[in-house]
Length: 371
Length: 91
Image (cartoon, rainbow over all chains, first blue to last red):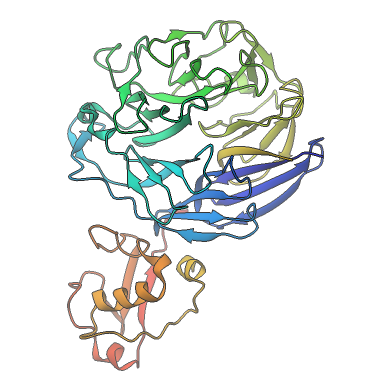
């Protein structure tokens, strides 16, 4: 019988939640790396027992941990992320030039086919790659070398490269997103990158339709249709049907189109999920009601999913890497909150239950569907 | 102490240092024995001490001493330890 493993990164450690395919009873293991910030953990699609974790702290900097046994034991691997050449400057919050400085790894994306190959999205924004299981990391510096870097600026959480998506049908194509620069695509395995922000409109930058400068919070795709992208921007939920060449808004009837997460149903490429958040200053759900919104039409028409979620006095946030889906039938949907709850739905969002309620603030949620 | 957890090391480590014992040579020797500590005490590139760590020895704060300054005799002789301390800050 299939089982599910949920990897949860929090402000004070990592947790591994496991269940059988019914997804009713859960075992909670952790904290791993107690006291450290775990921005992200993810398993290799090619070897589900190979996990990678980004562990960081204000005292001791960045560590990368690797597990070969599904998270039971871990070993530190290389933590040296050195920018190629002279890093140059990006814009600081006040608009002045600010030197590129490595701060932390936000996101680890293992290769779809090789357990030893992993991409890392870092702050200040850049993408790194290891091909030896984390023993060494090398920048794909064509991204920073695109030439628009001096116009990139940090979002409130820093200038982070937080989203990395590999095209399952084309190994040379990767999508990434940066707050606040926008989305980029490579079609040559990371040598050169193209900004893919046409159609985005951001009122907080001098030219709302500029080539770069957009605060993209998250991108998602369905592996059967990798040219269809969905985006939760700072404000606006967007869709592209041509691999990011052009975007159009699909916020439709959402109560607010601000938010962080977006994800796609494992078996229905037109079914997508977001968690609307009231505004960029408030960072909590409208009316104190935590609701996931689902569109079965690829956007524009949204329905609120609230059964099992708090509908009174709820003021948590759901951060950009904190939603994931499993590939069971029915599709499981999971998300974590800054209040420490991890919610799961075993019926594609119709009903929800808290797997665990009192973890440290959740930074990331990933799911592995195991045979 | 997180550094001890990372390195799976005891609270006190005896190190043989090549040449004059200084902050730099002590940290070089420590990182040679425990490579997983590279980057956690001082920056990989700049070699600067991480701001929330301090170096104490023989009741002195050596954090702002030059990296290549000789350590106190009591540390060199092994009578006193060289402390790497995490600041009490943050949450």
